[in-house]
Length: 515
Image (cartoon, rainbow, N blue to C red; front, side, top):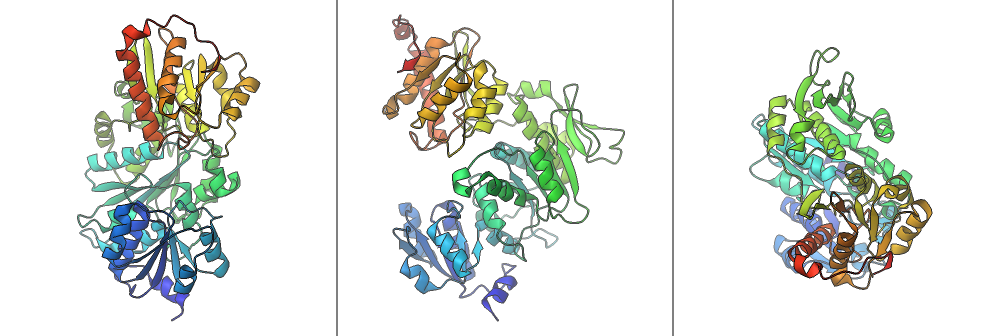
């Protein structure tokens, strides 16, 4: 049997994986889950990584794999000598990485963790002997919220469901959970989808339903171009069985569905904030409705919830309502009743750092949307809070922020610019929103950046204003992640509010410029 024939036969946990030479690239949570799974299957595993947490590095030999750690600017001789039959890459490795390029040039098959998980998804099966259904969720923004919403609705509907994938729980951990699930709700990054798109064979997943929530510039440095990023996202719909859910307000997602190779009989299901037609979900006079998953969809609609009820729970921002409609479509494709969806929403709370109110004082509301790590996400936040004092900046990831400033920034009360890559942000305001007062926070004051940003914002904001942290950029220039950035913002807000007496001692007016 040739190596390719053997790989083609590996479509079950019970297949013969013994002795298969597999190189695993990367050793964070995903890489370790891959190595742990493959060694349990009996494969011969070499983990190749530049860096690794001490715990993972210690556990690699314990589970029965070998570890090579060092500089990967060139392909290590140890990897070449190992002659892997397949390489399983963690999603952080871009197409341009030397090891990924070497594998493609030499014809070594490249998998991601999603493909491996699909091949072994039958480790734990349901009572009828079948593995869990999979639901795929991607998009430039809103993935995690929609994944959590969908899983919550499914559980409320009586199904055993687990959110996994890019949301933080490796999908292989969910597949191997001895408790088993009815549905895996899989959040997919464009990086994972790029690897999934390399192969369309027996190991290619066929999700029960899938959605791409939206599409905008992001991760262009990783993919190399917007077209490559778009093409990766489109893989989410491949082989969808029941529902290909798309955003009616985003033509790119409709084109993805139109071009997708889905299972015969799969339906295109649209959603947006407008009045829905048949096979769509939308909003009619403040009521979220389903006109897709009912027999009388040409003449009737099913009520899911109301915007008023969502507002009581802090879930009425337009982009959150859109996420709720998308999640509802996925849940309805699995026969979850509208009453269960309403019940699920009653107890649902957004993730920290997603349009989270972290303080109110003197008529000013402070909102943390540190998860707005790209312009598309920040645009949604600014639409929810027009006229806000906007804290913006960070790592732009090769994305032009000019369009966002032109469309949304001109309406800001003021802008507080943070981050190392400030010149692009400042230039965008000078070009597109010259009337907006702009303040800079010295990027060398990393430890005090949020305290200074909050101080400047507080001195600009008046009663009835919102101060909005929606950076439109990644955070790793000054923080350990968006969560660290948001936590420091919230802490600085608390300190500012608690220090009101000292604040009154500041009688100098803030003026635009360096701070």
